[in-house]
Length: 111
Image 1 (cartoon, one colour):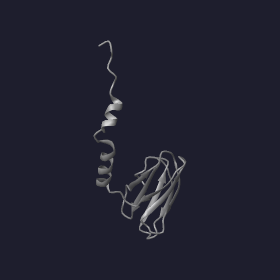
Image 2 (cartoon, helix red, strand yellow):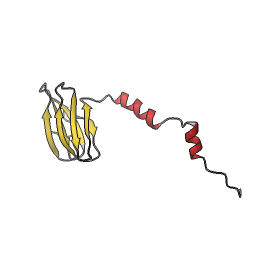
Image 3 (cartoon, helix red, strand yellow):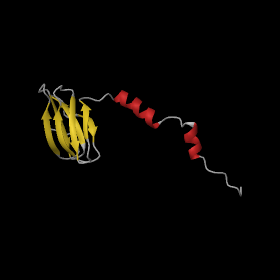
Image 4 (cartoon, one colour):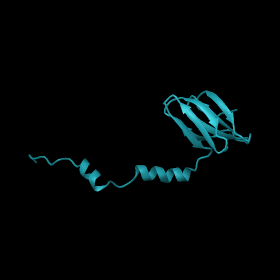
């Protein structure tokens, strides 16, 4: 049973090695399941419903289409440590001098 999705599962696709299964759901997620896996691993999330799902012939990537107008290729597993490093470099960084200047409030002439 695919209990990891929060909403209805719309499609599944077997990997070329027949040892893993990819699924798409109304919760906008794409998961990969191993033979003994009861939760699956989220490998991708779209902004709108996932409308298509297939494995690429290499068996290491899943391609999806979405009602958000995108098609994406996802790796078959996620390295959370690597994603954390990428996310922190994009979100938590020092502002450049130009960015700091852009956010300065003009001095009030009456103060």
